[in-house]
Length: 193
Image 1: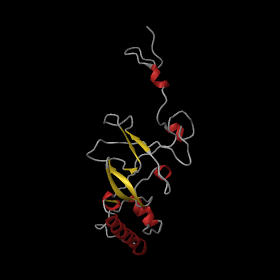
Image 2 (image 1 turned 90 degrees about the vertical axis):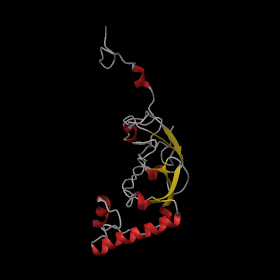
Image 3 (image 1 turned 45 degrees about the vertical axis):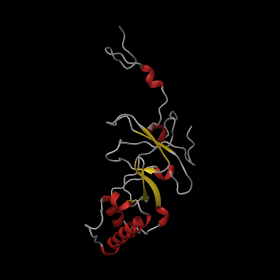
Image 4 (image 1 turned 60 degrees about the vertical axis):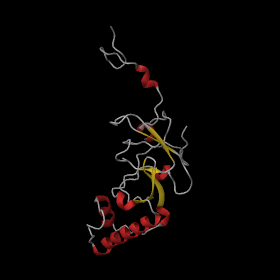
């Protein structure tokens, strides 16, 4: 008896799996390899404040974001924040401490997939969203794009995919979880194969 390529003596594995082309690979993103179907991928947006950043109504989102910006600017000028009024996290506090001015911009309002098959207006801004990851490259301000979202290998849910034309949340609750979703897609800067 001889071991397989990974040194297993018992329950020998099928080593052909390692030869399959992966959908995404972090080594490709880092420039250390070019062996993957998609070269640009990202997690979904982590807003840290969904109740402020998303809304079914465009006018409702405008109203909420204008208020959020007002309270944020108040923190810049007065050093205090109406803590109970907005959800202020570490990142937003750091931006305020660095004196980063913010103004409401209607151009930052986009359609986002709040949950699979549920679209809402999203205020997409690197300072007011907790983490935007690579999404600005995948969904640039001008132009349309398509993305394929899928669960990652470490997900506790079964493998699943969903295609979307809009920015998607990182972890939609009470739905088929996309977990650490990768969003491989074509991009104006990187041509996926």
